[in-house]
Image 1 (cartoon, rainbow, N blue to C red):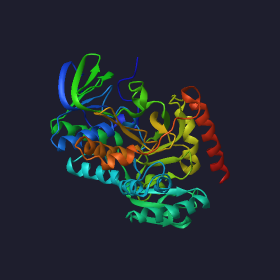
Image 2: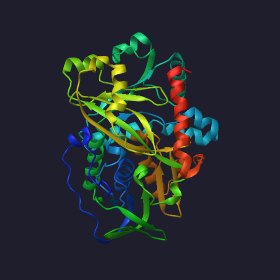
Image 3: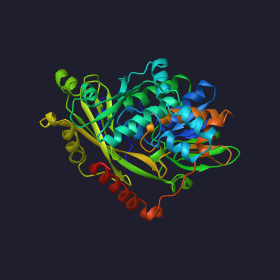
Image 4: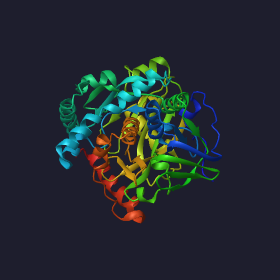
Amino acid sequence: MAQTDHTSSYYAASANASPDRPALQGNHETDVCVIGAGYTGVSTALFLLEQGFKVTILEAARVGFGASGRNGGQIVNSYSRDIDVIERNVGPEQARLLGEMAFEGGRIIRERVAKYNIQCDLKDGGVFAAVTEKQMRHLEAQKVLWERYGHNQLELMDSKRIREVVNTEAYVGGMLDMSGGHIHPLNLVLGEADAVESLGGIIHEQSRVIRVEQGVKAVVHTEQGQVTADFVVVAGNAYLGGLIPQLEAKSMPCGTQVITTEPLSESMARSLLPQDYCVEDCNYLLDYYRLSGDNRLIFGGGVVYGARDPANVEALVRPNMLKAFPQLKDVKIDYAWTGNFLLTLSRLPQVGRLGSNVYYSQGCSGHGVTYTHLAGKILAEAISGQAKRFDAFADLPHYPFPGGRLFRVPFTAMGALYYKMRDQLGW
């Protein structure tokens, strides 16, 4: 039987109070039915409700059950493939639109937190840490690229400067993005769900969608009810299952692992990250970490292709934490968990429409916290009849993984092993 309550994570253990929302029963009508109560679904619903639409969200488990409630909690700008890659592969107007939107998701998060008074431990400042000189040169080019799109809250850091913000010998330098930052991710989506309901939106938990019947009006079926809607938004990402077969071939669920220490003393916490910024390194299989609101170190990394749950998350992640911070060798790990995200071959999001009224966005490829909030805005714009920015994403080319469904996991894992070797050798 599928799990329908939150995983045993630090986030679930420290979540703000949230009501149990009843499962869908019987037949209902709405303007927009959203499938999935993670960031994409809840963000879309909020933008639509603010425009006066009637919205119903159907969630198979609990609000924030998937990646939205399990991720590293970092506000990271741009996409999993940066704007320079987009510029090389699309026309100038499409590249301009996508470049301008690359920094919008973080602004939306801060606007939501302020407008709806969401308590989610929001902190400013994110560090990209270079392990090699080659990575440092990439960050120098990235700063120039981002500034070309008007993003100016950036500071390059040499080896001395980065140790002022990340107390480790692991890095040769880095880049500080003060528009980056970090949050308690589950509390963010729970606060946004409360905002949805404050505007009259309806959320049904434990309401797994089993079929979407397309037509002039779509009918979304659960095991105990159905919702008839003018529009449907499919926002299940890696937890969608086989509901929409057309969306499976060009994406693959992957797992990432996170551990959380016991609470650290104030002096220990500040000795690790004196300014309380979040950090991610520049490796292909990157590590990411930050302090929680109660001074725990939250440390994540690694990818399990095909979204299998590893037997021992702590054993996978703890060695990397100690490589960065050997002074934590005697610190206890209180929580360890895994969560799935959806990977595309291009590492860029898949956005589109099925028929005339079923919209979707998926495949954030590890950059979901900011992108999903932008996705909610562009999906709402498209449903409202303003599709220019939606089309900029929808027109991106996407390709199936080599090997098809049977071999996509081993093929992708082989590719990742190659890049891991490159990271280790400093190529």
